[in-house]
Image (cartoon, rainbow, N blue to C red; front, side):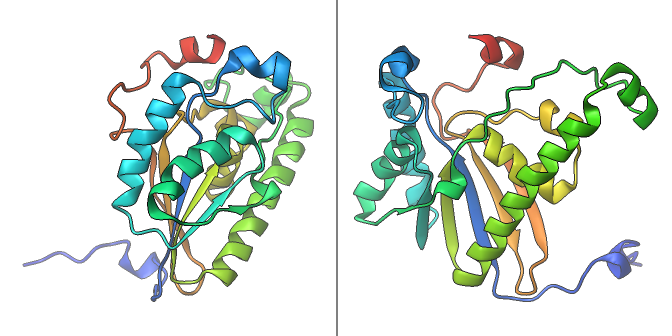
Length: 224
């Protein structure tokens, strides 16, 4: 006897067409040029171009209809390495630009209760309100893209913090969840939206296309 899924009655009834969105973080930039050119114009490094080539090969298998990129050079360069192979255009949208998250706090995950967060992190409410605005920005963008490109497959070439805002906004995570999430360079995260706008996160941080996976100790990558 086949047992019924106990969660089936709680799940929304989804319908086609499905809209598939790939959140693609740019490849490794040349940080040596940041002081000279500034953050916006910083290009990819030699390793970044290599990463972007492997990323492009993976994306070619996904049959993408539309490509968006932020207005920052490293995102556009990563996207162009892919689009040049498909002779496809890029829609540049400043709403995908990186979010400056200057207030970094090393908050221990185990201090989980609301009261303890307030006790150990006095500015928790302020930071959470800032994150709410970031998440609202990404939700508006998803709604706009969903309306314009319903039933298509899209790639959004953007940045680590904006991708974290997309994902934590869907999961309704607070600032602690945002700070606990890391998005690797040249990674792909997949969203699927059904015809009525129900959103699912299919996967996060896929880097199987890269020959050299990121360091497992991501705390090293944060300071290197």
